[in-house]
Structures are given as structure tokens and as C-alpha cells.
Length: 225
Image (tube, helix red, strand yellow):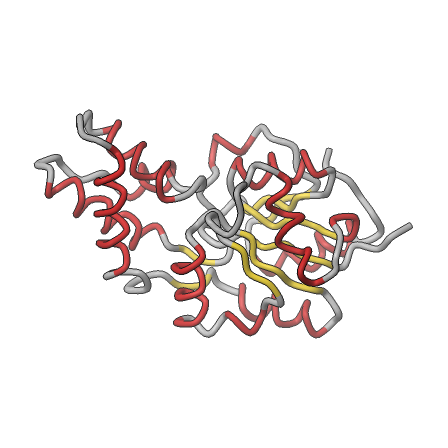
């Protein structure tokens, strides 16, 4: 039996709480179009499948009629100005992942956020050293929930998915893990909420301190339920 010792980690809503900064940029975009802001809770419900989906959902929520591409470009410019104003790692995230790495776990970041923003956040928050590989939503021709995104993230390390566990909060994370046939640990504290609650996962956590125990139960080779 191949042991589980590779952890694929999502970014938004899993490693970091980035919704305040995403919401600030999205609401600035809406304000420029004369639309009222969206509350933070609604923004969290929209996060998880990349910037395009976030803008598309925000525009639809405020019933704006405008071509998506210019809106997306403007959102990305606004977000670049507020990337890490309030974005922070979740409590216990850094210590827990550092401890797992010291114990021999191989860590890789796999997110649908654009790779440039992802690397900037990791650098600004001194998180980059935790991960041996980082892949964003524009790193390949596919992204989560396509399981190929997971495989391609690990390919440069010579690692296969048969050793992997995915840590994520949203539907795209859980669906990608299920399609890849690997266990997923669901972060209940993230942004997935009801969208993810009914999807397959092998374990779930309410805080990072629970992650080592969840992984210990899966490390022998479990699969997503």
C-alpha cells in the first residue's frame, strides 16, 4: 500500500482568509458602475473558481449589463492594489503546515487564483517556503475541478496523485479530489459552505490544529468517500 505523504493545499478559504481584500476590489468595481456593494458573506459564497467566476457572479448579483472581459481586467487591477491589506493565514495554518513538513509531508499549493497573485500573497505573508510547488488557475490549460490540475501541480516534483491528499474548502477542491480518486480534507471554516457541504470528502476540520489527526487517519491510503 502506497502511503499518503503529499498534501495539496488550496489558497483562498483554506490557507488564507482573503475574502476581505477580494470583496474590497469587487465592491470598488461595482461602485464604479454605480452598483451597491455586496456584503462580505455573499462575497465568500462567490469565491473558489477563479477571478472570472467571482466577477461574473458579482456582476450577475447586481444585475449589471456589461461585457465581462473589461470588467475582469479592471477587477484584477483593483485587486492588485489591495492584495494583502487584510489577507492573513488562518489561525494555526503556518505552524501546522511547518510541523507536517518537518515530519516528512511534501507540500504543494494548488489554487484557482492567478499564479502571479498567488505567489505575491505567499511572498508577502512569508509562506512560500512551505511549498515545493505552486500552481495557479492560469498555470495550465485546466483548473480545478479538473483533476489534471492536481496532477500537473505535482508533476515537476516527480510525485503522483497516488500519494496525495487534498486540503480545500470549496466545491472545486472536493470535486477535483473525487475525480482524481484521492482523499479530501474539507475545511469547514472556509468559503465552501452549502455549496460544498454535500460533496464527497474523507475528513473535515474546523481548525488547522485538527489537520494532523485527520491526515494520520488517511495516511495509510484512504480514498474519497
